[in-house]
Length: 145
Image 1 (cartoon, rainbow, N blue to C red):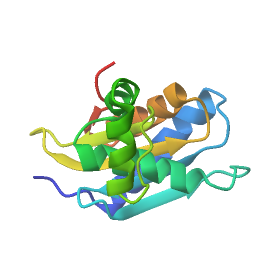
Image 2: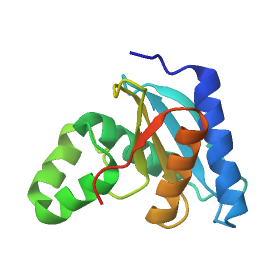
Image 3: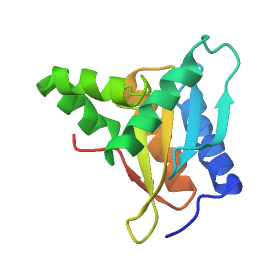
Image 4: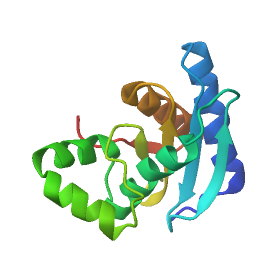
């Protein structure tokens, strides 16, 4: 298993935000967690709203908690809302089941972390996470569509 370095986490953020600026997205917050769920790096663009960290963190943490991208967790939440509510309780409220949370996998397919993005539409948030992960040389797993 590959370790997620601080340098790689910072590259994910920088490349993701570069993608966002090129697409003229709203100001974003980007969280990178390692495989344990520990915060590796965070950046908030100027003029982001107050709780972008918590939302981005909840997207990334939910991915790690369930071992799948938040696009799929969104589908699960829509199909089984009681389960989603119970899961949010179990993980202490750090579960935001909407697109924008993406697992980071190494070349062998092992989960080495997750990225959460918040600030624009959920679909746009997801593209930022995917762009950053790919730019750092890893495989992005956003979940089934």
